[in-house]
Amino acid sequence: MDKIQHKFVNVGALKLHIAEIGNGPKVAVFLHGFPEIWYSWRHQMIAIAGAGFRAIAPDYRGYGLSDPPPEPEKTTFSHLLDDLLAILDALSLSKVFLVGKDFGASPAYLFSILHPERVLGVITLGVPYAPPGPSMLHKYLPEGFYMLRWKEPGRAEADFGRFDAKTVVRNVYILFSRSELPIANENQEIMDLVEPDTPLPSWFTEEDLSTYGALYEKSGFRTALQVPYRTVGDDLKLPDTVVKVPTLLIMGGKDYVFKFPGFEDLIKSEKAKEFVPNLEVTFIPEGTHFVQEQFPEQVNQLILAFLAKNT
Image 1 (tube, rainbow, N blue to C red):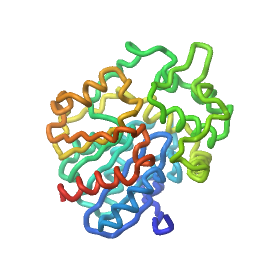
Image 2 (tube, rainbow, N blue to C red):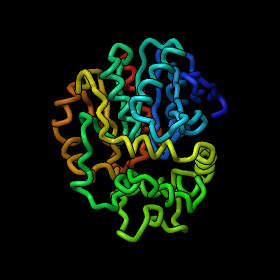
Image 3 (cartoon, rainbow, N blue to C red):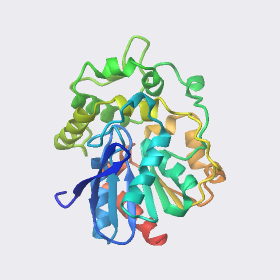
Image 4 (cartoon, rainbow, N blue to C red):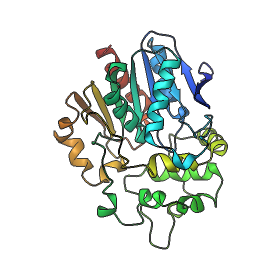
């Protein structure tokens, strides 16, 4: 871990934090999800650097050590895509692999559509590609579903505000490590779904939690609630809806994402290849939503095999 270096890249008026290790000519850029940060890729970054690649993991604007935007509530996925392009340009990276986890899969997929000449391949964990469009979750899931609750301005702020940042991250990690969708009752908040004495997942240490807690203590959750939860379904005006670069989807067999309406069929059938023709899907049977932290060696091997095949 002490070999991972940290620097800041100027993007407009913002300073965006990146973690970096390795100096090989081939580069993989790791895009985190929520409630994650650059640190969630620590195992993968060290592994690919040891295999001769350069690993870069930014914190999105408003996350972790990166500056918050002046108006977090106006942040969109387009800002994340523009930031990624600016980071590649600032570091003189002409073509990279993109590795995205959770909602970080979206900028990975979308950037490959907008800038295919800059992308060697895409690896995503936990979230399959579906063409952007209006969210239909409210039609299929109850109002207590966590994404619907967090989409509502002020609701999550009040819920999270009862706790320190470390406790919020702890609770979300526990919730997202389960195989069921987090759904609260009508008179219950999402944070109440986790009892205070619930243990952390065995693969997630108190030291890990403290690291996440400190980073979210700095950034808060304003931007994190805006992107992704309040921008799902935004019209990104894509020139195309097909991901044409080589793509690997890694799924934990016990990931709660399988319970999203239509997702299991999309992932396990050939439907996904309609929009990602060069797709390979692989499963880690005991894996949860945080498969890269839970089974790092297996995920590292899958990533390295994909990088080698597409280099």
